[in-house]
Length: 131
Image (cartoon, rainbow, N blue to C red; front, side, top):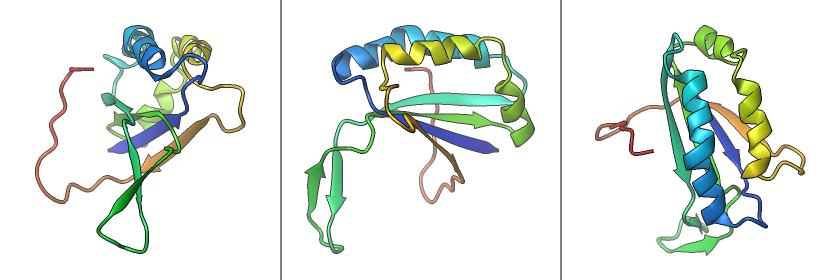
C-alpha cells in the first residue's frame, strides 16, 4: 500500500468556509471522476485543519498556533505502480486548473506532498463516504 498526503493553504481572500465548500462541492467531484474505478485506487480522504497546537519542551500544556497548512488529502493506492499510472489520468489536468479556485497557488511550493508509511498502533481505521 502507498499513501500520499497533499497539504495546502487556502486562498486567504476567500476564507476557510468558501474554500472548504468549493473543495467538497466541486473539487471532490473532479477527484471522484479521476480515481473511482481506477485499478489500484483504494481511498481519498479530505481533512480540514480546525486548530493547530504545539507542545514546548515536552510539557503537558499545548499552545494554539497558526497552522502550517489549512487542509490536506490522503490518497491511498494498492502499490506504487497504480499510483504512478493514476498520475497520467486524463482528468487530472482539470483538477490542477481548479486548484486556483480554493487554494493558494501564487506561492512557491504551494502544495506539500508527503509519501508516508502508516502504522496502526491501536484501535481501528474506519473509512466512509461522509466526504
